[in-house]
Image (cartoon, rainbow, N blue to C red; front, top):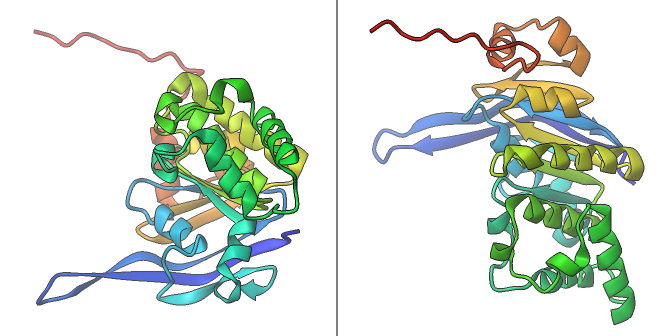
Length: 267
């Protein structure tokens, strides 16, 4: 079981330009830990470096410098197959994370076959159905369908189910609610909370919506221009923000308990 994933001063430098190359920091000296059964919110505006950090943790890109440790061992020394059994991602666009020509049952069977070849076909079917129920989906309504026949909220739950089937201990949720209806966002957030509390799942929740991070996270990291500018317990960040950028984010977040005042413009 995962004890901690630790980012140690990870930096990612991109270059742009053909003649005069310019260095751009996608992430700069980012350090933090994610403990078992903890939700860490990574918050910042678009371009702040959140997704760059997630891509490095998922081994989609390598850091220019620094290291990422899983249980004290560099993730880049892990066998890819073993690593992805433990760490999975749920992305902003769930449709792009699945083969559009595969039905949902085939998508889930292929994931399960990577880790459970000793199970019979009937046992695999039962496990898939029970996992779908665990993420609040009716197996009879989704199995046998193609991804495009399901809603965005249903597809996000399919991705979570796929991660659970391979036994993941850490889930990277990168803007998982941004492409689904507001009416179904709370369901996804509550699902993540349930998985943390009842299954001990660790989650890195990446969002530009600091209100969602407040609802979900045990701790919050605030990123700006590739750097973590503030870190702390969620209550502390919201009650006593220290960095000016954090204060601006909090000031711009809508307060649902306040009535918006509107006055017509003079003609």
